[in-house]
Length: 112
Image (cartoon, rainbow, N blue to C red; front, top):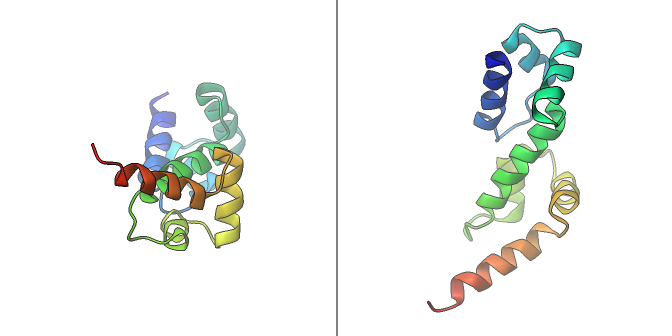
């Protein structure tokens, strides 16, 4: 269990890039197959899906910073191109990143 937790923390600490299953299997000293099966059994997600979730969560946080463009956020979260980021973001959150950014901008402008 502690080896899987180490892998999970490693993925969370490297939200700026794609972490390969081979890296995680080596980190935990498991085979690729055993690592993938064990990770899914413990966390309910495949390592790949967990990595995407971590990167998209990081992207959502970065989108709150109006200084960064959506493309810069995509690059900062390890997406190869804007299309891949846009597709992944829309699939995960149900709406485009630009819409989420617009909603966040509107909340900041509302006087408290």
